[in-house]
Length: 584
Image (cartoon, rainbow, N blue to C red; front, side):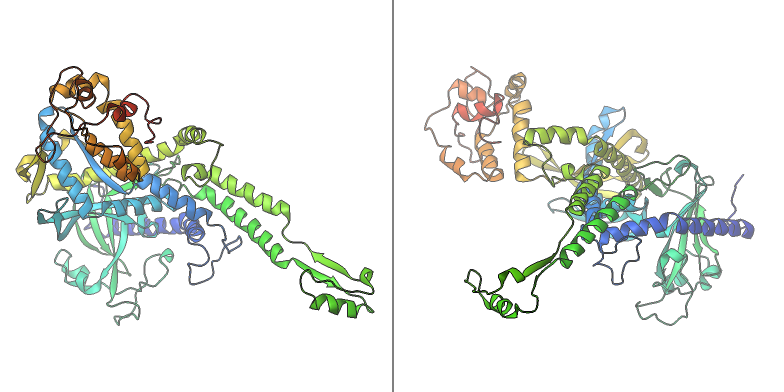
């Protein structure tokens, strides 16, 4: 038995009343706090109107901006790669690799990294909800490095602004929501002509004022004339998802509140809306934003600092001249620095000083900044803003211990990202027109293949879908990672025999080039020379050919023999002495 009937006017009115009550509750609780966070983040110079805050409106120290941007960088990553693996059947490994390639291309085409960054930031100062669906617009799906492209219909990932979120505030967990949705603006003429909407309700759609304060509720109806700030009239719609009935509605606003379309949700089982919660609160589906506990320390630090600055600006040093000493004062005023001044009554002239900033206020400002850093997870250490100990090694130990909270936040973000990517993958698996050309590396060449709908049909539950946020690494970090990999894997004595059996070896010339470029050490060109002889067995072993086997060196890119390197070059890398080699 259905709990909600979209054709029943009483059911629609009850839903509409519940949405309005929820919006009113959000306007009284979450939205004002979110606005404080936004004001603290943007500062007093960004807004066109003065900020109305209980604390000092002048934000000289952008603590919130630093903390929020740092958390966004550490939590969202700069790019994202799919990790696809079969659940049980290992024969699907090759298919999983093809799916990964298509998902990576899809995520790049829909700019999913930008959506994740916006999602994280909304979750820091408000509460982040992402909406995933299938788009109608056909866009180009381009292979990495070019070579091919295909115009296909792609999913979308939109981040819902907290002011536009419609949510059942009476639910105590997200999984127990009776309804959830969002509101959005579309061109009025498009909505009135859309064949996906019912003819009667769409004819009653009205234009709304997009400039109206969104925190006051639904946009207010206006006349049909063009608003001076818009190119065309807009109307506001609501999408509402009812999980208990697996029903999706689109409703109008502006007085009519009629159902424009409805139907069973034909998408991923989780539904179209995905939450990102960093701080769960018992008894409510809405999590507490990370930045809310930081606001008081941010305001206090700026208030005390601004007071110290005002004291410093009021400081003065004025000579005091009593009657009878005017001539002496005039000679002092005209004298240059270091010039002798002849005075008749020097004891009558003194100096009156209004002191500058109170040292206790300056000290308190520093303590409040440290308190803010502590409350925000030690951003000085996580962001490399200041040294926390006398040595680099101690700082690295502290960062490892102090990063446990950040690691938990990253785990939650990665889990939410994987859920979104799983929904994106669901749409690809169920797209009957799916046919994407692929290029896969096999040995030294590439193989052209296709991923088609019949390859993946009915196999969605056979795979695990995870996503890995990738953080940009500096050349020094990449070089250090390369050397650690060489030490622990490539030049590991336990793997040397297996590398020899597979005909693998270390290209010393390529290693030298990487070290030269990433380490900015052109001097390396002076120590790699052509010995003019064949490498001896010991040198062959260091190149991965197996100790004492006497194997011939591998051919280089030109088809000739590769130049051998002195054994000492790799001895410092492979023998546990990376730091002593001078390359780290």
